[in-house]
Length: 76
Ligand SMILES: [Ca+2]
Ligand SMILES: [Ca+2]
Image 1 (cartoon, rainbow, N blue to C red):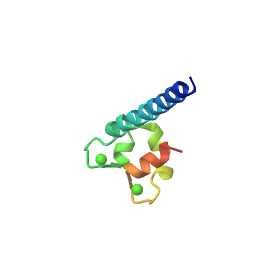
Image 2: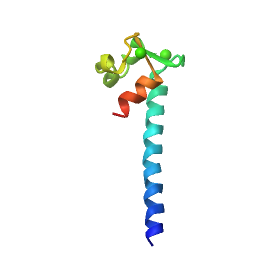
Image 3: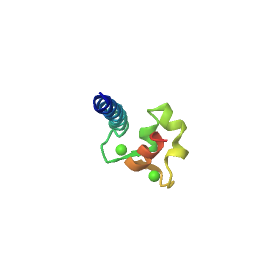
Image 4: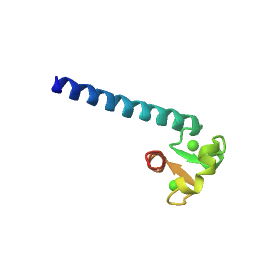
């Protein structure tokens, strides 16, 4: 019984992680409209959440958001 519960909670945990990942990846795809692998400030303008947090998301201040910066922001 204990083992079953453990298995169930692991399955639930990974389902949550998977959902979060899928959600994030869908969000990224919607933002990176020219699919060059980074989000430019112009692309971010389409998403108020990203646009208003731009300075916080663009950690290295190079004027674009890469996947690492994007994931870092949303995994906080
Ligand atoms: Ca882009
Ligand atoms: Ca950056």
